[in-house]
Structure formats: structure tokens, C-alpha cells
Image (cartoon, rainbow, N blue to C red; front, side, top):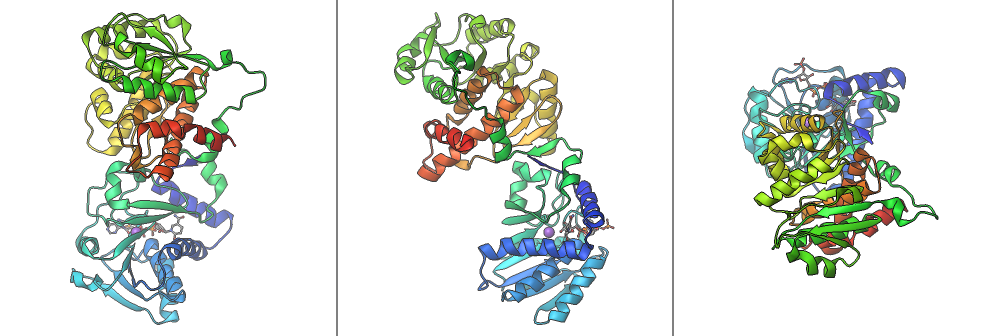
Length: 501
Ligand SMILES: NC(=O)C1=CN([C@@H]2O[C@H](COP(=O)(O)OP(=O)(O)OC[C@H]3O[C@@H](n4cnc5c(N)ncnc54)[C@H](OP(=O)(O)O)[C@@H]3O)[C@@H](O)[C@H]2O)[C@@H](O)CC1
Ligand SMILES: [K+]
């Protein structure tokens, strides 16, 4: 699990590494430049012309070091130095001297608004004006240069951060809009937010061997999940386990015309290792569920088309509720009753969340240790609108604390907020999963894991990881465009097997 640190923590980490490795700062910068160049040369060969736009701090120093290394690799390189008042750092000056000493690279200064045509010969524009030292929105000549870079034809690649982009707060001023961002050591919080994509593009983190002990003990409430952590959470079965060890889940899902949601959830619950599964269905769903999911038992509602009746909650280890449920008045009442009678953690999704959003007096009945899985629209119905993604994250943490439950906000880098404020971003998944039924599958997986008495947070982390991983396996085989929710279920066993293997 990787911690996500703030820009000021990264500065402290940088200083700590310099003092304790020990290493002189220009050598650490050289390591950063080499790591960037290793990433770069794997993707772009030296037939591309490369323009490097540098500031005068350490991000600019990186740019100059990169210019030298790429020149040595045989790339046609040109450098612009943007001088708009930011101080010149020592390592910037050293790398400027080294580049001049190497020779063969044209270096031009920009001190006033340039003609944007200056960048028109470059196939690739490397952005090294500002990195983690940015403390306020850019102005003046920086704004002019950034505007030119953003309209240039070349592919923009940012060093550490796009210039103008804030790592730990909303970006309000102009910023380079990068196609790629190559960041040092740790991802930055804002990379995980949808609104950042226009600036950061696809991002990669390269290792520059900053002090691992410092990283481990740094105070943060934000983490990036990884495969090793997911693997460590997955429980192994033992020889004498029997189905009673793996719980009995109830799925309350589906209504007339939306029984497919129940089927997808049920299949995913079964594929996630549950001991027994019962699906509570209105009469319209009886033959559908029995035919499509023969492994599941049925609890049959008295109502023809929606969830309206009582269930016997004492029989179940956990309940997953919401996919395809609808919001009929009878369903609202039945959900209310269920919340009053079921004391164990539940998985609450889709229309069950919408019912909570519209009947906020029910929120306090959500059993502690539950998992809520809203997509952004459902989340907005629960917590109201937000100004920016940082505020959205705070609202997510707030809801998790209020309900003493885990809130899983679905999207690219699904975020998983625990009641204690810790938030985890998930690395797996792909845009092919933005398709109807994908969320129903997640509900099924989480229900299956909670039924097996996984700890709520651990189950949420593992389930979200597996869901995305199954989607990735499906997309590799079928392509993102053709991926459907049933494929995610189909590839779930592969995801479990690979993670556990
Ligand atoms: N961390 C690490 O481990 C490593 C880091 N490395 C690299 O160092 C980079 C950070 O470098 P950095 O600290 O020198 O800051 P950088 O982003 O170059 O900005 C320069 C100066 O600009 C100023 N400034 C701020 N806002 C401004 C504005 N709006 N308009 C005008 N000026 C503004 C501000 O000075 P101030 O005005 O606050 O005095 C700031 O100091 C990092 O991103 C990475 O690339 C690697 O080399 C090695 C390992
Ligand atoms: K940059």
C-alpha cells in the first residue's frame, strides 16, 4: 500500500533522504532525471524532436538534466528557460552549467509573452516549469508560455506535475494540460480526481529511492491500494472448511423489468465464495432467478413486481440490497423495516441508496460496519453538491464517519473511505466497465465477502480491487468497447485465482 503525501511532506522527504542516505541534492536530482529519461526513452525514440520548457527552480533543474541526458541519447533537443521572477535554485544553476558544457543544445530565454509558433517544430514538449514548489496560481509570462504550450501540436509530457497544477488543493489558475505526467516516487492526491485528468493525463510514478522509512512513518490518511495488499487480504481456504464457514447472504434486488440486476449480483456473490445465497425476489422474478442462477435459493415476496414484503433477517450473515430495486412506496417501507430488523453489516447500493437520499431519517438505521457503494450521482443525492473534488472527498469521509461505515465512491480510481477518515484509492479497472450492471456485480462481490465475515474495510478494499481486476482481464480479452457486466462476472474467477496464486 502506497501512502499519498502532500507536496510539503515530499519536500521534507527529499531533505531527509539527502541528509540520511546521504546523497548530495544534485545527485538526487540526477537520479530523478535518469528515472524520467528511462520512462521517456521506452516510449519515444530519438527520431522525435524534443523541446524542454524549464522554470528556474528544481523542476527546471530536472528539465535541464533531462535535456542533457536526452541529448546524450541522440535526441534533437531544444531548451527554453522561462524567467518570470521565480528564484533560481542552486541545482538549476549547476544543471544549466552542465548543459552548456555539453554543448549542442540551443537554449533560449523567455521573459515576455512569446509567439506561440516558437514551439511548432517540436514533436514533444517536456514541461519542467513548476513542480511541487508551486504555491499559488501562475501569472504573467508563465501564463503566456503555458497557453502556448497547450495549443502547440507536440505531445506534452510533464515532469513531476503539470506546471500550474496543484497537488493538494484545487487548481484554479492556468495549467499545462499534459498527455502524460511522470511523477517522482509517490502519486499526488489530486491525480486521483476526475477533474485532474485534463491536466495530468495518464500518469506514471517512477522510483527515485527516496527514504523508505520516512515514507512508512509519514502521517497521512490517503493511500493507493496495490496488488500485494489485495493479495494479503485474500483468505485461503483450508481442507476442512465447509459451506457453513462461508456465510449465508441474502440479496434483495430486482423488480419487474430489472431482474437482470439481481441475476448479475447473485452470480457475482456466488463467484466470490459465499457459502449459501438466497435471493429475495418479487413474483415476477421467480423463474428468471431460478433459471439464471440455479445455485441460489429464493425468498419470495408477496408482491408481483417489487420488493414489498418482510424477510427473515435472522437467517442471514449479511444482506446486499439495491440493484434493480426501484423506489416504489412499498419498497421504501419494506427497506425501512429491514433496516430496523437487521443488526449486521449490509451492502447498500443503487436504489437503496436513492431511498436513503430521499428519506434521510433512515440514515441512522444503517448498521455500523456496512458498505455503501454510490456512483457520483447517487453520492450527490446523499450528501448534496460539491464545489470541487477535494470537497467531494471530505464529504465522502464525513458520510463514512457519520454512519460508521465504509463509503465506496465508484469511478476511475474508486475511493474507499473508512469511518476513521482513512481513504484508499483503487488502481484496477478501466473505462470499459462504465456500463450498465457493472455496479451490480460489485454489490454481489462485496456481499459475498461480507457473508464470509471479512472485516468491512478489508472486504471493501479486496472486493473493489477484484472487481476492477476482473474488468481488466475481461477488457484484455474482449476489448473495452465490448465489455459487458456479465464478462466481469465471468472473469471474476480468473481474478481470484491470479490474486491467490
Ligand atoms: N521532492 C523530491 O524528492 C525531488 C524533487 N525534485 C524536483 O524538484 C521540484 C520542486 O522544486 P522546487 O521546490 O524548487 O519548486 P519548483 O516547483 O521548481 O518551483 C520553483 C519556485 O517557484 C516559486 N513559485 C511558486 N509558485 C509560483 C508562482 N505561481 N509563480 C512564480 N513562482 C512561483 C517558488 O518559490 P517561492 O516564490 O515560493 O519562493 C518555488 O520554489 C519537484 O517538483 C521535482 O521536479 C527532483 O529534482 C529531486 C527529488
Ligand atoms: K512540471
